[in-house]
Image (cartoon, rainbow, N blue to C red):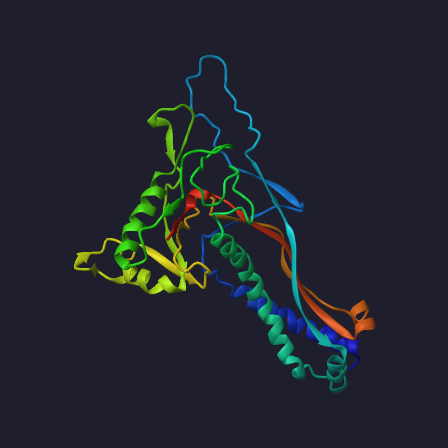
Length: 317
């Protein structure tokens, strides 16, 4: 069997393995990212709507609101890739015996590519989460840090805070601070035109709660999530949230996140121009001719950016 035929045979097996891995993908933290396509563009303006003033009595002249400057939030796609290289000598040996069995270890590695690629946007989001009280990865559409004391659903700074100071890290203190974080989240609002209370609209109309915490706090939050009584007092937080822990640098800070995205928004935006796909080599590739390697490349273009600040509350200690 010649190399070209063997390579085509292995590419079929690699494609099958890659597709199997892609189909088995299950996001660990559903709802943390709001996924949407950008189309074939490098940059897209993501619209945050908050300027409609509501219904008004029709008196003969219709009222229309134009999209205001500042509500367009630019998200720029980046190129991402990773791949598997196989020495051409290994391909040639398989061709000599007319069998790809000896290449199974490479096929397995190719099958792992979609899992690693699928986790990558969440890795980016968790990196951004941990430093969300700084502008390391940019700001939100209101020009404030993801977690800040001066948020608003507008193009300028406001007075709503999703950055709280905790009382400590004991179970009792975490219970107190969970109540404070939920109260803050429940209070986030915007004005639907006018200044009266009747014009206020809640930003978190539906809630599905997730606690993201450092590994050191997992046991305490798990106790709050599962125990009926804590310190002989009925625990009203039992079963009300899920937990994800991570090896964060700061071992005392944690996050309450609303992962309900029925409003088509999440704490982070996941913009996709080109989904990650596997690119296959041929005998005409320069890498084969010059470097004696065949490359299977997983490549995509996408971006993760700060999204709806009101979906999360950071508690610092």
